[in-house]
Image (tube, rainbow, N blue to C red):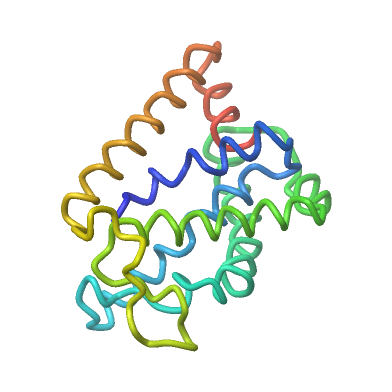
Length: 181
């Protein structure tokens, strides 16, 4: 699986291109799906079968967005207190627009599509079909595909972080640029 942080480039690009009002909501929209994998693993579902509704298109349109929306204020508070930012969470949450939800949905779908390029088990049509949809796995070889996807998204994430670090004048400004602005 692409490490969760390697899903970061999609919300970054969408935020920069379409100027969403809540970048953190987009980041969470593209990563909440992996909470399911962690929880299912602890409940006894071994990889690769520890993925379900959150890794489906139905989940992307419903549950994933709700979870991302619920987690956004919590993460804002965490970031605010850790880095001593001077903002109010309501300034971001109450400014969410329909466009932000569309961008959030695209981030959710991007997670599902990226994962379906290189996973051995892809429940993209859950709950309608229980079978894995493997038509998108690169080279019909999930191991080789995983190496390529991990490397590609790892390099892209690293490039974004280096780019933002080069622009920032302080750690606080860097954190703000990669999580808030």
